[in-house]
Structures are given as C-alpha cells and as structure tokens.
Length: 303
Image (cartoon, rainbow, N blue to C red; front, side, top):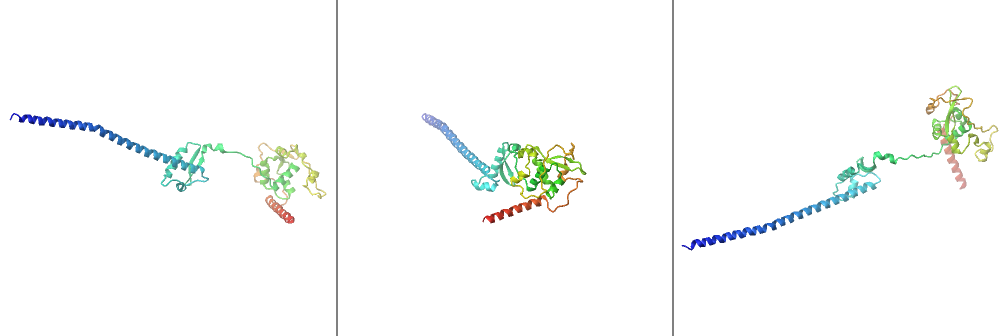
C-alpha cells in the first residue's frame, strides 16, 4: 500500500521527461524547416528573375530586328512583311508601337502610311535637307532665234520680232528669255498702243563675254564661222546693234508699269503682220524633224 503511490509518481515523472524531450525535439526541428522554406522561395525568385531576364532579352533582340528591317527597307513595310522575317509568334504591332513612341522625339520618326510603316525625317527638320540648285536648260530653236533678233534689232517689239521671223511668237518664248535674265523690258514704243520694247541685259553680255552689243559678230564673222551661206541675197544685211538707254521713238516705263500684259499677250493697238501658218511650237517640231531626217540621210550615205 505504501509503495503504490511512489510508483505512480515515478511514472508521472517519466511522462513529463518524455514530453519535454518531444518539445525540445520539435523546437530543434523548426529552424531546419524554416531554412528549407527560405531556400525554396529564393530558388523560385531566381527562376522567375531568369525567366523575366530571358523575356526582356528576347524582346530587345526582336525590337532591334524590327528596327533594322525598317531602316534598311527601300519602301514602306506592312505588318505581314515584317512578321515573315521575325520569329514566329512575335507581337509585331506592339513592337511597332513601342518603336514609334521611342522615335517620336528624335530626328527620325516611325510613321504609318497607307497601312505600312517607314522611317521618315522629322517634319520640323525638313529645312536641313533642302538644297537650291541652278538647273541649266538648253534654249529651244525658237528661243535662240528670238534672242538673236532682239540682240541685233533692239529696241524691238513683239510684232517686229514676228515680222522678222515670219512666225508668231508665243508668250512662253519671251517668258523664258526674261526668266534667264538675258532679255529685259526697255520701254514702250511711241506709237499707237504703246507696245513694249525688248533689249538685251547685262547678264547677256556677261554670259557671252561681250563688252557691249556692238561686239556681236557681223556678216563677215558669221560667214567665217560657217553660220551664213556664202551666197546671200544682195539686199541681205546685219543691223548694227545698239544698246542705248532709250531710242528716239521710245519712252521709259512708268514706275507702276510692269508689262503685265506680256503674260497674256500684249494687248496693244500695234499693227500685227498678217496671220502666218506656223507658230513657235510647230517650227520647233519641224526643225527637229528636219534635223532627224538629215542625220538619217547622213548615216545612210556613210554606210
């Protein structure tokens, strides 16, 4: 009877020791589990960062490919053409939008035109690419004939030019000579209708290397150069050019007189020669045909 309680107490003490050992064991196991969880989360973070870096690298590479294709293209490219040269599944519209935003503030812009895309210089910088150049054009045969008549017969009116040439002079021919600066408006003839008179300018002398129009070649000089036939009519003569400021039958142009009627043909009461069958355009076409025929005949004779 007296020993029973002691055995019970001993059993209770053993139970308490076992419980303490279990608690200590569980406490010892807790740091290991937290460390493994931390390692697992770190590995997951590394894997996600690797996936993100691979995705960003791929997108950057594809973006560079789109940029290269657009830059080297000789014509605008559409989405389909770009997709054929890029990896399958590429978000071409998204890449184009990203490139468009990237180039918006730069000197070159990516712009859509008719459903296609191309690189174009920014509109506000277009002045940097402008270049002015003088384009040399060969005068037509009617223009050369009109210039020669003005040079030798100045001051001369349009009606007098037509009378000498035997064909009507189009306003375009005179416009070309005025634009080149070789012909100028001298004044108005003191006759009914006050027609405009034409003469050569200083630019004409500079271009042909003349000190004055009096240095223009005469009959003998033209014959020596082969520009005139040796057998000329007895009454043929070359007038002596004169570049005086104003002739006796001329009056100076008024300050408000710009000769604007030249644009639509001189509206004057000057007597115009009888209508002729040919015009400047017809004469030029016939002269070209004659030259072609002569060249063909010359080639045939050589063969």
